[in-house]
Each structure stands twice: as structure tokens, then as C-alpha cells.
Image 1 (cartoon, helix red, strand yellow):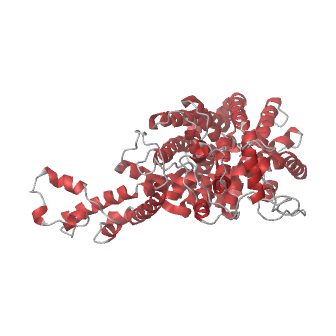
Image 2 (cartoon, helix red, strand yellow; image 1 turned 60 degrees about the vertical axis):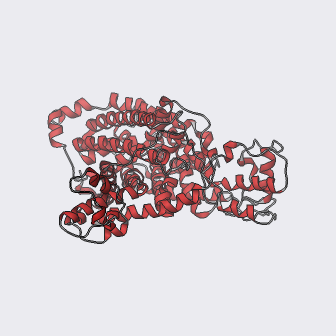
Image 3 (cartoon, one colour; image 1 turned 90 degrees about the vertical axis):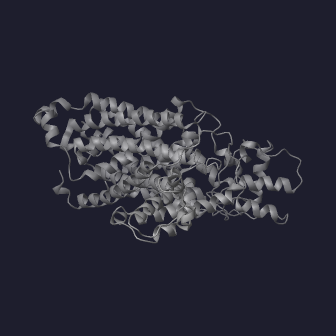
Length: 637
């Protein structure tokens, strides 16, 4: 569930596309003979509403204002990866702190049910990764529109509600991960210093507070997380060490023998009533849909087949790591397995403390990445991170204020042409301000996020419920519900035609009035009975939402929730048409891309509906089960 640094940098660029457009327009309007911005910044980019307005207005200096996210080809990584390299990057985004809770997930779900759920989640993750990328890059309607992020893809069929839904799920995942990381720090560092888990509450909280303030907060205050990109590799290395340690030192043999042998363990531990708590943890551990786009962008010679190889290899390796750690960790402690399985090992064990140290070090480096994601989501709705108001420590806009002021843009231009002090990046060029006390806007939001995560970490001690709640809500949204809705919305027209055809045949067989385009054809225009063209004509029928909602329907239509599915598909049809029409005039995609996605099949629609229903069930049941367990801790094994 670790957010990749490239993904974070991509979204930072999205938030600041306003600067690129303003600078280019001012150079053009002033008659500058400087060379145009490079193709990497302008090719295939749709002009934003602000750029259009400025281009047609007077030559007066542009007023700084917030800018919605746009897509630019500059967001595409310049370095290309092989299948192996892209697979490694995807594993980095999958295998995170959530893996430490897999043994606890098996305890909650039951050994047999938990293992099967882990395999199911892995299969669904692989399918959803391919589904999202195929719709964005290979769908006939979208492949020329340069869709670069998950939330942008969701905005095509569902507008701002779609992007907001995805961003909200990302925030829940990021927030839950940050709380989990702090709890892991609280479990590891104090234990290494002699304060065992469950004791010395004050000392453990003070250690967490001091270490997070000294290490986590300064790292999180950075504007650009690219400098922490190496932490992804460290995170995976730490998880592999954890898998090896737990598999080697977990007392599996002794515990299994004490409980009657492996056969008896399987017989007594098939499925538990707290199944959905385990599912939430598994969803948290395997969630990586937020990183799918940046990884696919880095893949050289991107085709559907090559992307399938990437997802298959990555998910297989991640699932194997989770299975080995989960089964060996759970069998070693069975009903005593804790949310952080390292807490089951002796606090003075040298090997366990080495694993704790490596895990804590990883958490210190990974927390800032999740903080950046949460900050990105919040600032999408609350303005850019480089504030536009005067500095709160006494400076004015030109002296210490911030945001995209004229002075800032001029400084950025000078740096772009090598005339400034910076290196061409926006970090040094932008004068930041607009926060509270002596912090700028970015630092204010970052510190507020830290406060919101440190408080529950100080109050609670068990990482298990945190991972479960996070997966039940955020994981269900971005891993299951989101991909299913996106597929149904993007292919809404095909779904309406498919459902309209089924209804039309059902109505004809029972003598009811027909619907669709063939309903307006006279008897003289119809082919003779038995003519093969009769089937061809009906296959070409087009059905509208009005055709489907009017007329009689079978009981199975309502039992299968098809009124809901057709409503969602119709919303997708309407929004897709509006947004594609608005973008088509400036779209400049690759016309040579021959790896076009074939049309959806009834099986594809069945899978996407299963994703939605599975996600809703996992969310609702997971939340209520967690609440019940927290209220009845004494009754839970």
C-alpha cells in the first residue's frame, strides 16, 4: 500500500500546471523571441480554462488564481522501464507496512478462509490494475486523451463526483496508513529501549512524540518527495527481511504440536465470524491502484500484453510474500497473534530487535509519502500549497508572501532560462507564505495532518483495527468499487445496448411492445422469417435509457439491481460525451497505437458488477464488524 515517490511527484505537477501556462502566455504576449517551451511541457496538453481566458483577454498582467488539475505530457516519466523494472516498481507500491498485519488478518478470518480471501484479493487486484490502465490507454474513446491519473479517469464518466470519490478513498488510505506507521514506531522503538508493549504507556508515548517530531515532521514538511524515492526500495527490503525472520523464528512446530497437529488446526480454524475484519487488513496490504498509472507510464513499449506481464509478476510475488509471512506468523501464535506480529516475539531478542529497527526506519521514511498524498487531496479542494496571502511573520507578498504572483512567475522564468539562482525547478523559485504563525501554507497543512494522526496513535495501541478500518473504507473504494464503476461508466453505451437488447427480446417473446431502433421499422422493412439478416439487424440496434426504463420488465430485472446499473451506465454516457467533446479539439494522442481495446463482453460487465457488490459488502460488513468487535472485545477470541 506504499505510495510511490513518482506518483506523488506526478500529482504535485498536476497541482501546479497553472504556472507553466501563465509563464508561456506572458512570454508570447510580450513579444519575446525566446524559444518556446519544450515539447515535453506542451505536447498533448489540453489548455486549461485559465489559459484560454488569458489568451483572449487584454495584455494586462494575469491575476494569480487557483488552478484545477490538468493533464500534461510533462507528467510522463522520461525514464522508461522494462517489464522487470516496472514490476519492481509495482511491488514497491504493494508491499508496505500492511504486510505486518497479515497474520492477524488470518486470525480474524480463520486460517482457511483468510488464505482463500488473500488469493481472491490478489486476483481482483491484478484484474483491477489491468482494467484501469486498459480503459485509460487503450479504450477507443480515451486512448488519445492522455489520461494520466486514477482520479482523472474517474472524472470522465462521473465528473467531479468521480474524481472526488477516488480522492476521498486515497485520503482514507493515506490517513489510515500514517496512523498505522506511527503505531508501528510506537511498537518498535520503545520496545528496543526496554519498554515492553502494553506497559509504560507514558514513556512509550513520549518516545513516539519526540521521534516523530524530530524525524517525521521535518521530512513531511518538504515540498517535493522525490528526494525520498530510495525509501521504496528500503521498504521492500525490510519486508523481505521480515518475511525471512518470521518464517525462520516463528515457533510454528511447537505451537501446532501443542494444538493437536496441523490437521486439527485446519479443522478448528476454517472460518470465523470476524471474517470481514481480516478482509479489511488484506485489502489495505494489497491496495496499489493509486500507483498503477505512474508505473504504466514508465513501461517502455506499452501494450496490453506487456502490462499484463507486469501485473501478473508483481501480484504473484506480493501474494507469495504475504502468504509466507501470514501463514508462518499465524501458525506460530494462533489465537494469541497480535496486530503487529513482532509484538509476539520476545522484547529482548536480538533478531527481533534487528527486525524492529529496520521496520521503524522504514516507517520514518514512508510516513512523509503518505502525508504528501493526504496534503495533495486536501489542497485540491482548498487551493494550491504555495499560498497567495501575505506572509504571517510580517512580510508582504513581494517580500515574503507566496503563491503564483507576478514576481514569482518572473523568477521562475529567469530560472527556466538559466538566469536565476535555482535549478529550473519550482521549489526555489516560489516564495511561500499564507500559513499560520511562522509557517507557510504548505507547512501549516502538513502539521495539521500530523496532529490529526499523532492523536489516535497516542491513544490506541493496536494496529489491527486501524488496518482493518482503513481497508474496509479506503481499500474497498479504490480497489473494488472504483474500478467497477469506472468500467461501467466508460462503457455505458455498450451496457445500455446490451441490456436494451435483452429487454427487447424478452418483450417480443411475450408480445409486448418492442423498444430500440428496430421498434420504428415497418413490417415491410423487416427481413423474411429465418433470414440471417434479421439477427444482424437486431444486433445493430441502439437503445436509449428511455427505451430501457419504459415498458415491462421481468422480476429478475429488479432482483439483479439492473435499474441501478443502467442508471450508472447512463450517467457515464452523458458525462463521457460532454467531456470527450470538450477535450477532442485539443487532444493529440498517438494515432499509431494499434493495440486498441476490444469491445466489452457480457462477462466483463458481470465482473465489474461483482467488483462493485464485493466492495460494498466489504465496506459495510467490515465497518460494522469492527465496531461490534471494539464494543465486545471480551467476547472475541
